[in-house]
Image (cartoon, rainbow, N blue to C red; front, top):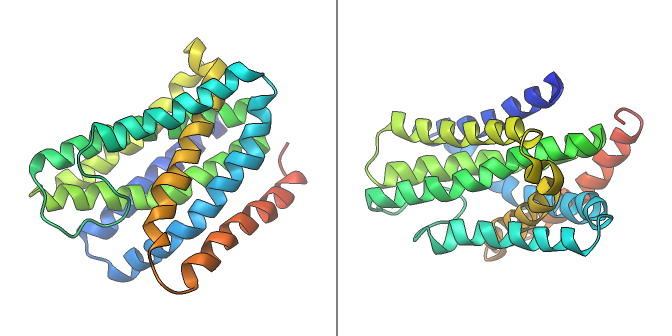
Length: 240
């Protein structure tokens, strides 16, 4: 693993902490910005998964498609079957302390594969690695908001809320560190990450803004897709 890949992993992990700090310090303006970014992040992530990752994955044949499905189903199992209460964004209702623990466990699996996605992308090309890093970073902020607010809603302290976000960031770094050293991850990590990215974009982020009225979320969603095309073009001449 290169130092550059590790630096991108640390930057992505820091996004969890930034989101958590915005919650514990009650930075309302920052939280509104993060909330508005959900739709943009969903559009960008969906575009990266469908146009950037899946073509690389499908070149390996039907077996790779199976791992895409496994990645998708694994996130659903962790976040919505084993975790009784989970949604992206700030939690405003009172919860039991166990809800925070179960949310942390569910998100830890997901954030581990955030790291696998970054590392797997850089194994293919610098361009794909940067695109996947940006896709991960865009939902790291709401991840931090989610876990910190769930911890606080369950009666946890501010330090525990930030600590939970740090665990998520650490899982991402661990995913990057282990990808090249664990054979199944090195071989199938990109396919698994494609499934995870599709789930986060389509099943986690999109429902969060779909019910909201107005054109802002819709414009942000399509703007995220347009942002992917613009970023890809910019990277063509800068990163190989």
